[in-house]
Image (tube, rainbow, N blue to C red; front, side, top):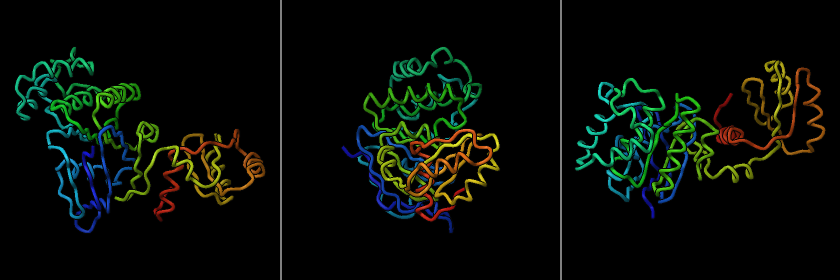
Length: 295
């Protein structure tokens, strides 16, 4: 069953087009990731979908009530001077929920916050704040959960814990749309939408993205990254990215052996091998095809 449909959805702020021509369908059982960097238009998209921002173009159809949509915003927005339990009781009252105590108790236990029910929410860690925000979003037993970068700024252990909770929520039948700038986290999605400068560049799953990515990808290791990066760039690759001592580079389709030899011969290269395309490789290619700039 279709839960929400957007067709040509757009949002303009003055002369800035924050979102342009977005098409999206969310159905029961979906686990969809909206993937993109800061200022890609992800938050504006979520605000339109949940009803906090009016579109300036296109059509948005919700096939479920507003109370059936749970929303976890990017920034923690609960009262810091109220305890965990008080925040939940306040929100339950605002939602008009009667006899909410049993559900609040179950939610606190499910996310491991029951021992902290009397702690001020402003004193919680980043991961615990997100767990509390998730509890608030689940109070109305929604059919669709929207999460805007729910783990940004959260430590790696808490990120894993939070995603274990989300998988449990999804297993209970709640459809999920989440946004993230983290490429590793994006791969949790069954379907991904790659967003840049307010537009959806491509959508699919990682397997289909890899099949559609032309060329050869190599992974290089070097402690002299800057020098090696310049030498590799002189070979005119299609894409080149670097993080720490790792460089990833994509070349047009060709016999890999001579190219592997040339890369290995670059002074400062310690390791080099042919690699499977990553989501970041796919994203860089999508940006280049769309005519966008990238570093």
